[in-house]
Image 1 (spheres, rainbow, N blue to C red):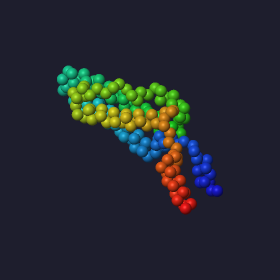
Image 2: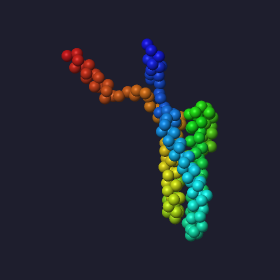
Image 3: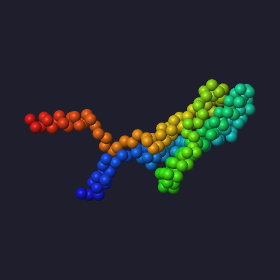
Image 4: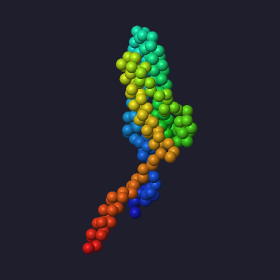
Length: 175
């Protein structure tokens, strides 16, 4: 039996965590890139155009701007930290155990979204906030799949229908 056969034989019946595979995939690389670009874009906006736009806002909108820009910055900091941890593990720069300890300091949920104050904000900031929540949702789903106790798919899950078809085929072949 060749080495490929032994590899398959060794892995047969061993659960594969698909989320862990995704961290090592091109899809994670794209998520990482998008996340870091969003961090850069938000920082540039808040330090540039956003600062200028905030000077023209009414009092209620200015209060909402200050609160929501702080929440956006905090949310993106936590998301970027999570992305950097996962990349460090995938590249072998950090053990999964160390990353899990560090993960405890990251708040992926954050405060509940408040759409009413967001309505008072300039469109570019509303867009950044919406995109940050989308990134948060994607990361939260991936993180949940990576956490202990997450559903783990096996390489070849049992298929009840295929089993029944196989039994029927065997029965008909006998006749």
